[in-house]
Structure formats: C-alpha cells, structure tokens
Length: 331
Ligand SMILES: *Cc1c(COP(=O)(O)O)cnc(C)c1O
Image (cartoon, rainbow, N blue to C red; front, side):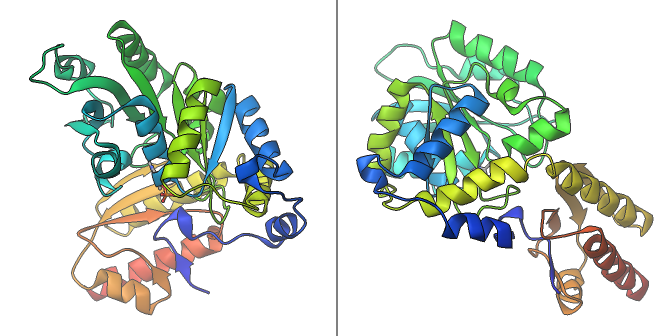
C-alpha cells in the first residue's frame, strides 16, 4: 500500500460513502429539483449560519463565482500573495471576471497587516480600479488563523465598505484545530467557500455559503462558468456523508501530522509545522525519489509539503518516517 502524502485531495470515497452515493435520490439540479443537493445545501447553510448554500464542482469555481458575485468589470479585490484564489487559480478573476487582484504580503503567521490592507484601498478616482472586496483564507498553508484576526479584518471591511469572502477550503480543519464551531469562523463574512473534496473525503464538490441575494448572483456565475450540474445528488450524497462522519475525525489527521513532524525532527530534518494536517520539510537531493521507491508519495520540491488525511493511518505515518530515516542514514 502506497502512503500518499501529496494532498488531502487524494482521499477516495469509502465503501459507506459510495453506498450513500449509489442510493442517493436524484433529480435535475438545474431545475432545482435534486432532493439530495437541496438537502446538502440546506444542511450546510444551517450548520454554518447562512441563508443559503450552493454546490459547485470545485473550490476554484466556487471562489471565482464568489469574486464575480462581489465584483464587476474593472473592480478590484484585496487578497494575500499566498492565497489560493490569487496564486493557484490561474488568474481566473482577471481572465473570466475582468477583476483586478491587489495582492498583499502575508506576515509569517499567515495574517495580513490590516494597516497595509487599508492603505491598499484605492480612492474614488477614475485613475484607479474600484476596490470592492477583501478576500481572506482559513486555513492558509495549513495554518488555522484565529477568530480575533477576522474580527479586526471584518471591522475594517465594514468601515471601508468592502464586501468580504472567506476561502475556507479547509475551514473544518481550522475549526477542529482551534476547538471552535465552524460557524463561528464564518460569522460576518458575506460569502464563504468550503471544500468537501479535501480532508472531508468526498470525491468532488465545494459549497458556497451566502445570503439569498448573493447566492442568486453566484448561481448565475456558476451557469456562465459551466458548473451547473444535473443529477448532482450523487455527489451531494457524498458531501452529506462527509459532513456527518468526517468532520470530528480531522483531529486524527492533525495528531498524525504532529507525530510525523516530531519523528522528522528526531531524524534530523528541518521541519516547519505541523499546521493542522500539513508538515513542511526541507528536502535534499534524491529524497523524493527515495521516498517514492519506498512507497511514499510526495510532491517533489525544495520544500516538501506533507499532508495527512483519512487514507493515511498511524501505521502509514510510521512507514513514512522509516523511509525518511533510512534516507537520513544513507546521506
Ligand atoms: C484546494 C483549494 C481550493 C480549490 O479547490 P479545487 O476544488 O481544487 O478547485 C481553493 N482554496 C484553497 C485554500 C484550497 O486549498
């Protein structure tokens, strides 16, 4: 058995999740009559404290639909340099939304300097794009950012008339790590995006949470982007199963990441983290190949990001540590 630490997106639907998918009652969701999609959206909205939710095929599309719901052509959003929606989504806001990003550097703890955020808001002047939106992320690079940071950021956004979006692809990792309810981390945001396809173990799907009015804009954007699906209840059933069974257990992934980080440090590696389910380790020439030969999958790079998830158990962590130790002894 391969121990795959490339990402928590590699999780495969369990037998019980597949059963729920096979048995899902479905309809045509473009007509709004897929009962399982409707159930998932209602459940998520209730759970996270929003009027409505909307199911997307991916987090990239959910983020982009949110940007397009807040911003029009020639508008601008403020976003962290390392934020997924800025860095890892192929510039979709600019390509498809005609929205200009204004990226800002993160501090080492993953937060933005709110004085810098405020200074980046453009004056009302035809020289400038119109600053409309502040987009934040939690977790960011695995770091669970605390509620008090968001309180200050949301206060600034309100005072300066900016809309707010939270990319909470791994929102539940943050909530479990901080020991708070996920809805408490969402409070005050206009839109929140939450992935079902990462640590929660569903094969696909992301939920966007918002008011009725913003969801109706996001539904239009989803249609434009080609994300309106038909019998999507098959996927929604996986999402419902994930929300029911795979949230609390994220604590196990965090514990495995702690074990992995401690073991790597003991073996002499330079380690950052763990941050929730992620551990970062400085690589050495030949390490990724050595790991692969020993059944441990990692994404190669100067700094390896190792991600724990529900398809890696404690024994898998020990096997990974063994492989790292053997390489340490060779070099
Ligand atoms: C994975 C991820 C996304 C995008 O999700 P996809 O479903 O892969 O498109 C968005 N934001 C963050 C923070 C992510 O980690």
